[in-house]
Image 1 (cartoon, rainbow, N blue to C red):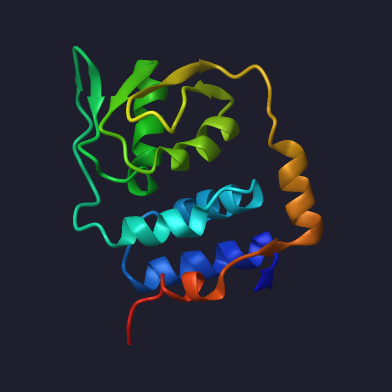
Image 2: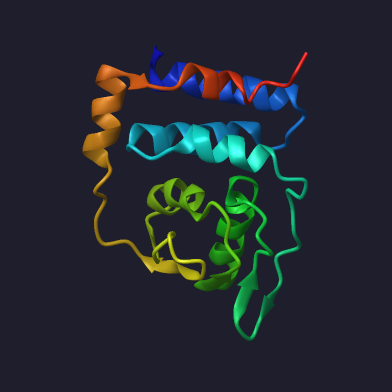
Length: 156
């Protein structure tokens, strides 16, 4: 289905609010940002919604922060707040680390490779390669799998 980024964000936020998920607006924004940049934001979100555990106490140890395979769909804002307060963080046992990317770009900080199960967040960002992609999506809209999008709504 063809949707504008704004419409996609609204639909995702609505579905998450119907599910009673906190931080729906931030998750919807990040998922839409990812879709706008050519990443599978909605697909990752559907995977995360199937997870039973959606939070973890972020504690730093000698190796960094162990995310215990809890999805960054739900943890990204807390991770970013920790990095803002305490500086660069090495993350372990990362699930859906790509959901950190929109936040790091927005906040203009660097991020290591989110494909790697352990990566660092923090430090200055030296360029933003996403501007053109976001502008293109705003002008031309997005193609999103309708069934995938509908799957994030709660069952009735």
